Length: 220
Image (cartoon, rainbow, N blue to C red; front, side, top):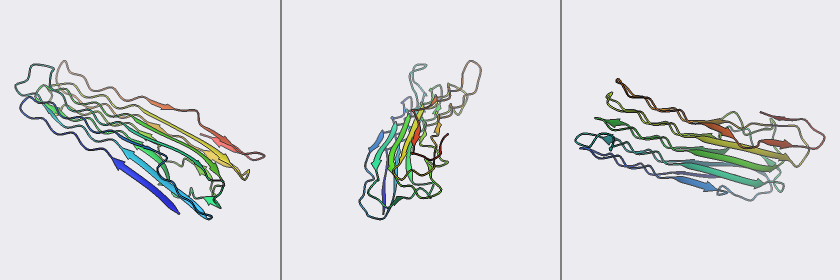
C-alpha cells in the first residue's frame, strides 16, 4: 500500500505600475498520508508553499514596493507501523518533504520578496525493509529562495529558514540508520551601488534519533 498526499499553495499575483506582488499561500499537512494493510506500507507527504508575485516600483515612493514573500510550508508526520509486515523505505521519494515558496522578483526600485520557511518532521515506528535508511538521502525541509532585483535598482530578498527532524524506532530490533537533512533557502541577487543581496536562510535540525534494542543505530 502506498499512501500519498501532496499540496501546493497558490502563487501571489504580480504587481505593475508601482504595485507590490502578492504573497504566496501557505501549505500545511499533518498526518494525512495514512493507510491500513497487513502487508508492506509506504507513504509520501509533500507540501510546497506558493511563490510570491513580482513587484514593480515604477512611480512608487522609494522603498515602498516589493515582491511578494513566498508561502511557508510544513509537513508533519507520525506513524506507528507495528501492524504492517514492513515499512518500505527503499524509494527515496517515500517520506516527508516541505518546501517554502520562492520570493517574488522586483524591478524599478522595488525590493524582492523573501523566501518562505519550511518545516518537515517524521516520527515513525515499525519494521523497516533493508536497507533500513530512515529519512533517506533527500532533505525533509527546503527553505524558499529569496527573490532577486533583476535590473540593479533594489535589494534582494532573504532566503527562507528550514527545520527538519527524523525519529525512528525499530519494532523488530534491526540495525537502522537515521538521516535528517535541512536546507535553508538562498538569498536573492541584487545589483548596483548601495544595494545588497538577500541573506541566506538558516537551516536547523530538530532532535534526531534512532532506537533499536540489541542492534546498531547510526544517526546522521
